[in-house]
Amino acid sequence: MYKTVLITGAAGLIGKALTKMLLESGYSVKCFDLNEQFDRNSEYFKDLPNRDRMSIFCGSILDVNSLRKAIDGCDVVVHLAAMLGVMKTEKDKLGCINVNIAGTDNVINTSVMHNVKKFIFASSSEVYGEPDSNPISEEQTTKGKTVYAVTKMAGEELLKGYNQYYKGLNFTIIRFFNTYGEGQVAQFVLTKWVRNVLNGNNPIVYGDGSQVRSYGHVEDAVTGVKLIIENSISNGKVYNLGNSSQVRTLVELAQEVIDVVSPDKGLNVEILGGFDGSDRDESREINVRYCDTSLAAKELGYNPKITTKEGILRIAKQSNIYNDWPSI
Image 1 (cartoon, rainbow, N blue to C red):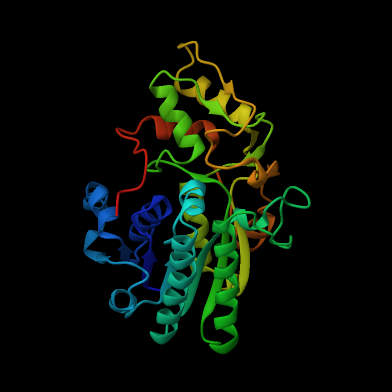
Image 2 (cartoon, rainbow, N blue to C red):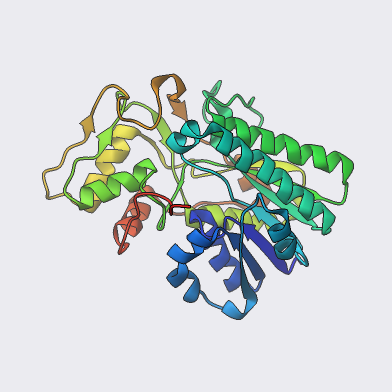
């Protein structure tokens, strides 16, 4: 059994939840992220169980020396660190390419040099672009419509290329579908709507609201990651991780936020019709995209349990919802 796991992007939404789950399960965990991220989340890490088995490494995935120190002695690397957010990555395309491609190459190469036994890469449902059909299986063609999606496609191919030359590196690619949960910044629509409704404001829907998505809670997502770490059948595979039972139109989801968080405030879903002011222009909008997770269910026993209602309640109970990532 693997003993020591490095998580890049450990202070992000998925990274924090995965750190906690692995510590509770007896792993030693090395947490790697930017200093600014750890500063914001210092209380979270201070209160984690079994902290004697956790170590923190501050640095950037663009800094190979920092990565070497963190990766040395690890059995598994879970690479979550990335530049996120449609608006942020479209405004800074070169930065996104640098972090998500060159940075990923640094993490993979350093892992190979330090004889890491298993490498797990966090990709995204964005790589599917506008899918040929729904629900989306892992066999569908990738054809991303944003620079972020293209960088994730490139990361997948980099990993496959390394595997051709370094046969000792077992790898798994995860395509996360709309992961949300406590600790997510309000740059993502579900968290933004919860914050709006808590503040007595209508949730705003861009487009006509008929866009369809499946939303997966972060607790289910990291359960899937742990299953991948612990099952050798996952080597060389690509898995969709999300919740195929929680499929909603955006209007339905926004109404659910109102019904769960503040049903008595007289709020209504505000449908703008267009995309002015949105973080995604109409040419990059995906109409329908939701996941088929049957492969993960069959091979790993993946069975997401958190409904959107429960997930919305958990977000609403937070003491603070940050608007954006820390300034760097």
